[in-house]
Image (tube, rainbow, N blue to C red):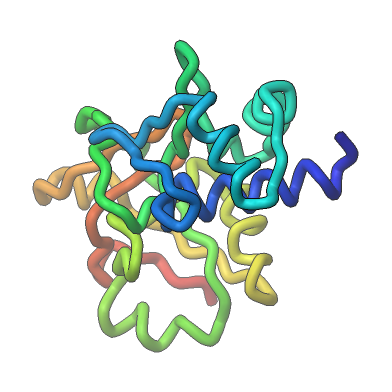
Length: 180
């Protein structure tokens, strides 16, 4: 599978394992998992043939490690807009986390902080480089530093997904260190 096909399969899986499983006739269990065979059959029935080797390669080689594959089942690691319980336990975060965005959102973020929008959680990066990549998807990136230690002291909870993304329900504006 070439890089373009790998990206196409990853996007297809993201859409259906995170946002719209019913569109291809699959149902995620409470933890977001679906049997690989069920997923492969649904993909084929909807004109997007994928085989088990393709899935394994996408899981192994996706630079964002978006998916987990276990015991014949697959799920997205985070970013769901459909209701799932990823079973992630609260965890003490590092002192500082990062969030990549673009300049056009800064006024709203200064006013309201970071909100999950359509997702269940705000996604935070453990390092500045990852936040730059995330912010670059929508234009020139702006990296915000998050005072995660202070948030945790104030009782706000954090969890970490399997791929290292930190999740929290909301980042108040007081916890955001804006550049410049």
